Image 1 (cartoon, rainbow, N blue to C red):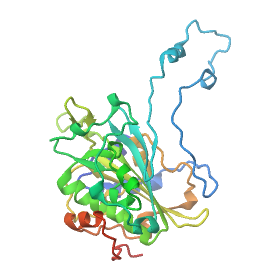
Image 2 (image 1 turned 30 degrees about the vertical axis):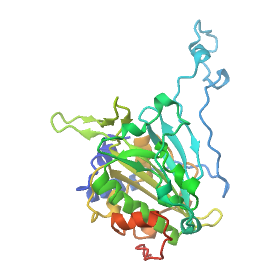
Image 3 (image 1 turned 60 degrees about the vertical axis):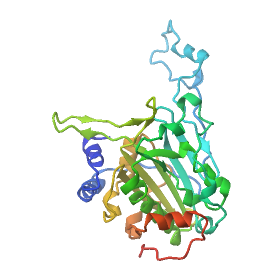
Image 4 (image 1 turned 180 degrees about the vertical axis):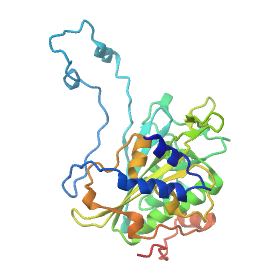
Length: 342
């Protein structure tokens, strides 16, 4: 990621976002987009876990006439060092887990009008649990969060999985959690943002969302250098506290080969005033890709892409925390204004 772009994203805060967004969006026209491969409509690729490379997959030596006297790949006989991403497909989520930070790299979900109208689960029957599919030494633990000062912040919210108790239960796995600031963020602005994503289904028949943490640098005011610094919670220290969170949204029009309205947002893991415009946190998806090392739309042609906040008004509908919790405890959702006028 270029220093300028990274600085802009790292500079996002509850107090300063609009100017940064304007600057980074202005840079879009200066970038040339690389052509992207197309895929057949409706085809969903099946993700696979990374495998140890074989000798056949290794690059060909520059000098074919040189026979190396050593074999570095021989270390694989003792085990493949990694990285291993612990790909985890569940009923309501699919995720890849980062063993180093004990947080997910990303968690993907799919919501539709029908899935959100279903009311077959009760949050009171769900409990936070450690994910035993991750080896114990790399796992986030329940006691890591105890008296940490941070919430166990859902990446895919429980409210998006009310169509099944099992589906909702799986959103409480710690592989779907990151440490989040509670008051002013997880229980406030972030929750309103999640509600915004759900309300998109009032206008789109299919919405896919990828959510995850970022660890962005901050400029040292004393020497002017950029450094990545984040807290680690647990005793012993085990789980990294992200500096920021992202969401990449794909709002599909439901047509084969149809348009996809994309929105990409980066929010600081900090208190945010509910009056802060959501659009002030909008960034190009390429900025999140550079910061995270991930790719989100390499198979989506540019001709099919629309900017979400140009198709609808990206604004929050602020509701009190108690009212949101009431809806999660099994009550059927009521029809309400979308706050998303065309």
